[in-house]
Amino acid sequence: MFGAVAPRYDLLNHLLSASLDRLWRRRAAAAVTPTEGPILDLCCGTGDQAVAIHRRGGEVVAADFCVPMLALAQRKYRKLDRRPPVGLAGDALELPFAGARFAGVTVSFGLRNVTDLDGALAEIQRVLEPGGRAAILEFTVPRNRLLRGIYLFYFRRVLPLVGRLISPSRSAYSYLPESVLEFPQREGFVERMERAGLTGGAWSDLSGGIVALYTAQRAP
Image (cartoon, rainbow, N blue to C red; front, side, top):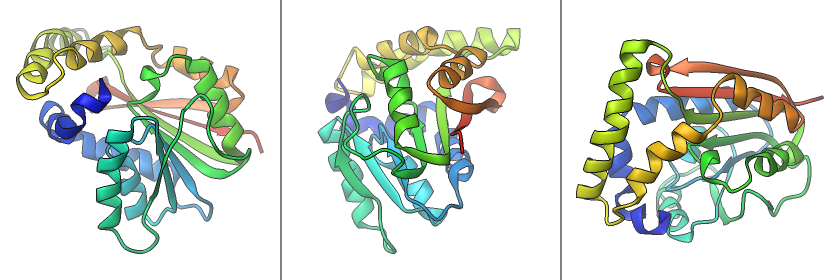
């Protein structure tokens, strides 16, 4: 599915979020920088999060198991100077890295797509160095009643329609709202991070609560 949507993925991200996705990724990048150690951008997709970290001076390794997505990311990385991100094929449930390898880990809108959330969080905890920070972006349902109604209508009706018109995968943008509604949100996700050994879990609602930025760290 992700291989099929890769060519139009950036266009739809910017269009469907009114380009707010750029702001959200900058917030995630700021949560793990500055740091002297390398940062892993997991489920990197077409590379925008890794680019945002690079622009803040971070040394980035970007990993994704969808090779067509990763190929598009590599094109972006080749245009950057000063230690551009390194892209690697990798499974979030079995990362090809030694323990305590990274000073930071980011995941932007990817964890809800893994088949074992707790397993992926355990891998994030494993590859973080003691004191290393994790920053995770995910869609959430707004708590404000009026905004929640508008959001759910857009998510269930408008977004799938636009996605079907532009993307070659008719199912991908119907899957998106379903995956968001099934994903643990706010307190529920912080609890899952802490269960995996990530401490100090917290979240910040962004853009009225349609997205949350979750942060935590591996215990020193």
